[in-house]
Length: 388
Image (cartoon, rainbow, N blue to C red):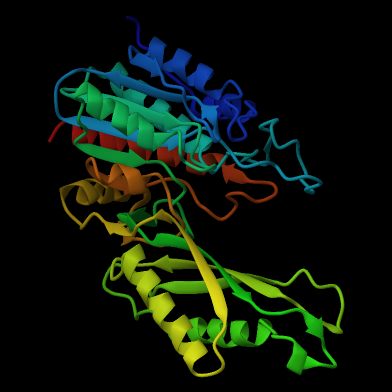
């Protein structure tokens, strides 16, 4: 087969022009399947669905059958451009202005996927790897993550396929390209706290039971005391209130119930179970300090905290970054959750991609120079991994 050489910018533009807003495939996986097939990969389209969630397409492509096995994981689904959002360009036109590529997904993470595939095409032009190379691309990362990476990994396990190392192309860089590699992530817990009372007239509070007063004490109890001080690899855990609502448009009615929403980003000092215990102890203590109230706490965990300790894989990535940008990255765990939270149960995983400053924002963009340098970094990763 003749060598196929891919251009990072052209592929990134083609991907951005696919309107793959979760859960729509939008042509993005069709494009990748065609490109990977031309590179010699065996491709598997993997649609998954559950009764209460829409069907989502995924793509798994592999080149080679022997070890070691390096997998690149990512997603082609993107968040909406936003109704009425004031973009200066068409978010799906992939326009280049003054050396910068604009478009939804340019950073998160179609640009990185294009960079990796261009790096693969350059590497394969030099010869086949002594091992296996694969890509796990989902269309369900920005959504509920129910029918995506987690189910592809289950499918791989059923087939008896194992992965030795995984690189996730999420936008991990902060101030400049390559300044951070993620070797773990904080867990995320979403909470809905509802306190129940009795509706009544504000002029006759003795005939009502105001749920806002105990709710205020309970919220103060969970925000006034930190969960922890962090550790060597993680910042302190964070609890952020996001909503307080009673659905009450008037000032002279005591509401029957009040609800608060909050999110906890917790480090590996905790599990979701210990965070729940911490919350309930403080909520109960706040009620004991005043007049008790009936409340309900509903929790949803989108991911546990995890850490892949520094080792050969993160060292290889650091060397690859330094060879291109001149300095080694920090090894961090900041930011939101990613599909690495599923992959870490199967193999060593780390994340390395573009700057995250404009991810999910209006006029999401990436400098063309960063696309070229990320392609060079990924090429250096391939060279180092398959020549160890």
